[in-house]
Length: 157
Image (tube, rainbow, N blue to C red; front, side, top):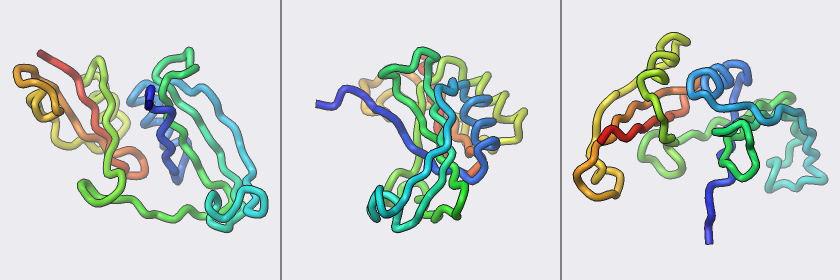
């Protein structure tokens, strides 16, 4: 039985630009920041694609406590270029991530102040989220520094 999400891993081109979005706009806490060497001969082709990889990995969590709290692991390749295989909205694969937030206006303001793209602020029915009719959810789509689509949702009724 699944208990919770462990983490979502996102490859990024520029760690500092990514941190401006995930830390400074969304308000996540950095719980770890380290560099890792992955040798293809040890890690295996399935993990590294046959490449020797040096990556900077930054873990962010919703709370400073960490532990079993879900997290985001940002990976920046330091010795080779990452392949770009992102999907567009509704294509196969993961096309966006969405987070419940407590202050959507503050997130929109911070995103605007830091120059991130803001798309389609709107209010939807709870039925659109697979829930019973009768409630409302405010929502907005944002693009991070690598143009990944991130949705933020806040219950309003």
